[in-house]
Image 1 (tube, rainbow, N blue to C red):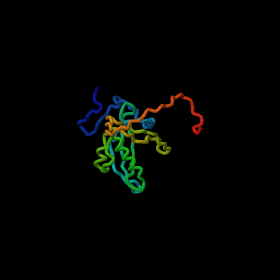
Image 2: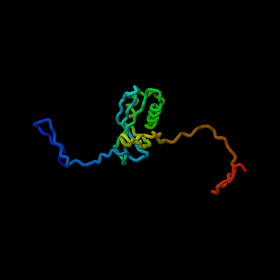
Image 3: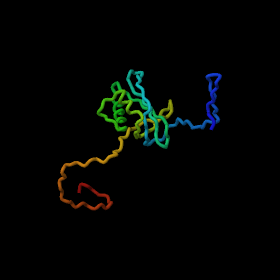
Image 4: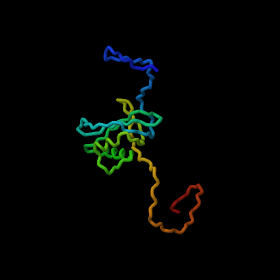
Length: 174
């Protein structure tokens, strides 16, 4: 394959042969609602017009379907509402972080490039077009067996259980 960019030694200009570039589609349509693996790759702290501080986080879809599609999330971290901070805690838990530790710049940095699962929905917007949103951050599945407790188990006498027949029960009060 020949190089796409040919250097011009006479100037600082460049020439790109677009006939050799694959059309990747570049769709900006939302991905279908569902559960996806995501990874945060960038964040910045900003201030809203109302003066509230928020974190703007860029997530990238992982896996085979819709890989590299981008989803943005804003977390309000000041002001009267605690929704943004609560969602930040859900994200920390989703990546397997410790929600009992304080959240600061370093802690947010530790969340970058950590894969997690999330439910993705579609937010309707007539002005700017529909976009994806994170509906919920999913807790990681347990990968290790839970150790058995050493508490003694009280013995019980077996009871005769009714046999399931699949028939509806009429009146429970009779």
